[in-house]
Image 1 (cartoon, rainbow, N blue to C red):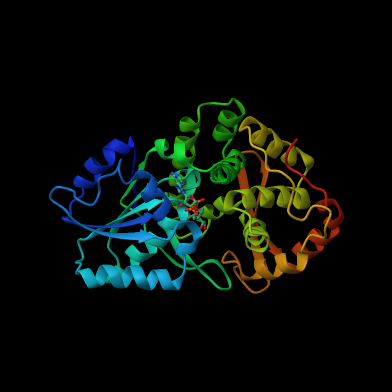
Image 2: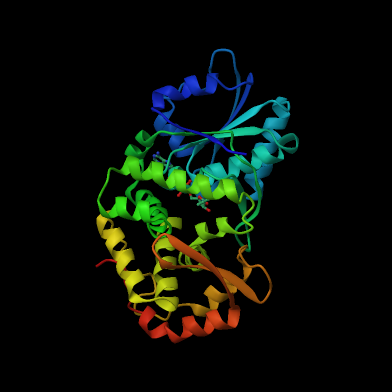
Length: 343
Ligand SMILES: NC(=O)c1ccc[n+]([C@@H]2O[C@H](COP(=O)([O-])OP(=O)(O)OC[C@H]3O[C@@H](n4cnc5c(N)ncnc54)[C@H](O)[C@@H]3O)[C@@H](O)[C@H]2O)c1
């Protein structure tokens, strides 16, 4: 079940694709990434391969039923077989979508990921969770389908817009709570590529011991339960919502020490998150709770698994009744009005 993970240059990608043991290559590429890199990536004519290319609407837009049907029908209409190999080129939205397409075509074909955002390099591209969104919440329709290869080229980050880079930093901050090694490296301001590799390694280890998120893998959801609600309600990017989710969960359930750690990590990574979207307004607790109840981490209609980090590198998963979470968030409502991350 383990993916082969390699770090390479963009100029190596064609060689990597040539090495795939199938003559039929299906490509799903993010529109923006393709317009930026089509010259550097001559993928339409690869010697010895037949290439079917589906250009994906950029980012999150792709993750819906219309696009899912369109990509599936496109590939089927061109004639494919079980040994076809699909390649995703883009950020986490593209790999979530492309992986789901691969899991459904002919009941599942092999696929590989070329992540092009920081977030997808350290998180979304690794681990085989693939999904589209439902009208009722993010990532509610999906599957577990491991990619065969993950080819990471940090060079792609050179064209990544600043707000997308910040979003990837959100997941890096998460790892800075889950792993002491990563925390130390971030605080010591080690080179970004080194930290990317550590995040990938950490996720890979967790996933290989709990592919279907029955236990340990849940720790990767640190900051995500409240974060996903914030993402949906306030329209912030995924990683920035995770940073707010971490701040709120540590504020409500933990000691100040953890908020100080969050601020130390974001300062070491030289990021500025800015004001919360609810600054000086009331925090939309009711909407947050409605959203949380629909979250896929909910294990029953009464309670939810929340990840807490009481000591850096030692996350735990704790069950909370919805009422208890609601009461705790409500009690902190006044403080949440002006809460900020930037020190
Ligand atoms: N499956 C998982 O385990 C997992 C984990 C975390 C997040 N996710 C999912 O990942 C998604 C977010 O992914 P993301 O943050 O990687 O962003 P994204 O895929 O939504 O892309 C964001 C934007 O960046 C552009 N872009 C991508 N790479 C670029 C590059 N190199 N240069 C210029 N522009 C580029 C895209 O066109 C898009 O406009 C969410 O849907 C989230 O649910 C999945």
